[in-house]
Amino acid sequence: MSTSSTAAAPTGGITKEHRKVILASSLGTVFEWYDFYLYGSLAAVIAVHFFSSLAPGPAFIMALLTFAAGFAVRPFGAIVFGRLGDMIGRKYTFLVTIVIMGVSTFLVGVLPTYATIGIAAPIILVVLRCLQGLALGGEYGGAATYVAEHAPHGKRGLYTSFIQTTATVGLFLSLLVILGCRMILGNEAFAEWGWRIPFLISFVLLLISVWIRMQLNESPLFKKMKEEGTHSKAPITESFGNWSNGKIVLLALLGATAGQAVVWYAGQFYALFFMTQTLKVDPITANLFIAAALAIATGGFVFFGWLSDKVGRKPIIMVGCLLAALTYFPLFKGLAHFANPALAAAAKANPAVVVADPKDCSFQFVPGELKSHVKFSNSCDIVKNLLNGRSVSYSNEAAPAGTLASVRIGETVIQSVSLSGLSPEDAKAAQDKLSADVTAAIDAAGYPAKADNAQMNKPMVLLILTILVLYVTMVYGPIAAWLVELFPTRIRYTSMSLPYHIGNGWFGGFLPTTAFALVLLTGNIYAGLWYPIVVAVMTFVIGTLFLKETKDVDITK
Image (cartoon, rainbow, N blue to C red; front, side, top):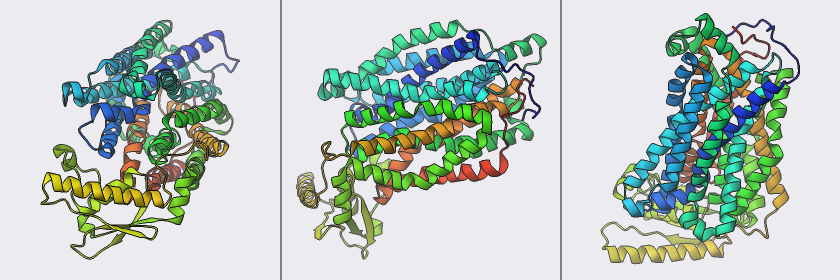
């Protein structure tokens, strides 16, 4: 960790050169996040076109897993490009990353679907997502390090907070482009072919981003090291090969970025998926709400970055993690109550209970299901799949061994069927009858097929989403400055990139998939919240006990 002495760097106001550095770095990163988040925003559409051989539930989770694949490889991108950034320079490294990102995104826009080229379509899609993840793994550390190394002492939190806005602004931009295309083309045309347009637009953004990045000069601290010959010749070994620095990397992951990541993804992406997939809110309406919340709360990134220069990085991030952990359940339950009041009322008045032999029930998303493309055949799985498809939250009650499963919705009890041993015709007839009976019971109990915008309490929905985004700004606004200050200049790019991208790529990137898997496993639509809550609490404890405040360190050493 860098020393705690006060730097002698100038503390004057922002200069024209500083504005150029912040603007150029931030705009380029905005475009890169735009590319990255297009896929996440269009996961439901992607599922239809590239995983059409699966049932809707597994297809959506496969789309989320493909989205998560980009996050999975981000730490590897951090190592590869972090090493290059510490050896050859910050500027040229993130020129390479933006080209890889832009080209990969454009190719998604022209990629044939499963209906055209079969299994090759999802395979190529995964490859392109991995290339995006590798590029993003090298992007963030470069931009944050570059801006921080230009910032005067006492203003690193403020300066780097503009980089922190880029992920949210990129998401905001992707939502606006998607909304514009939906409104111009209509939902049907957009779902059929118009979804490609936002990906194709990324090529124009790529050209703009490359031009912007070409205007930048190298970081003054790196340039000075290069001239003196003191830059690292083996940044990976220096970063992770000795315990003194490796310990800080581990603590930065568990005590800072892991909690920051789950709060970030829960407050923006999971909130969006929860509204569209669970609460059945119209995608345009849900995107408008998220976009409005982002517009209202995005200034919080700069505010909390500025505040962290005054009170420190650590207390703001720790408080954000704690607030999220304490309030997620009431906030998401409030979101359900105000966004789809009929669903919340039906769940309270007529709760659903699945009574089944536990051995007859399997996880709704299993490898065998994917490989064989066979539909559920056990009586428990069949009825749970029907309930999941209508976002009916249910509890589980054990039945004697060998008993056919049944579902109780309010006072109505319906016995499920087993398809094992039935001919295809008989199996279809049995499943169609069960589906009709369960659907009729769900409808009679008041469970809506989709959210009714007329019944929605729009101000309260917007307020809850804005609170969720404000939590995001608390944990994310100061994190770049904190990470930069934890590590010495010669290995800063490499050292800070890995914990950031493991935290955000793995802990955060897998949040939507993990959360929805927990929902499918338990039947409780709120069960997925346990994942971000547990991780946020872990970060609060470890960060509070073991990580030091860094706002006054000298990063020139």
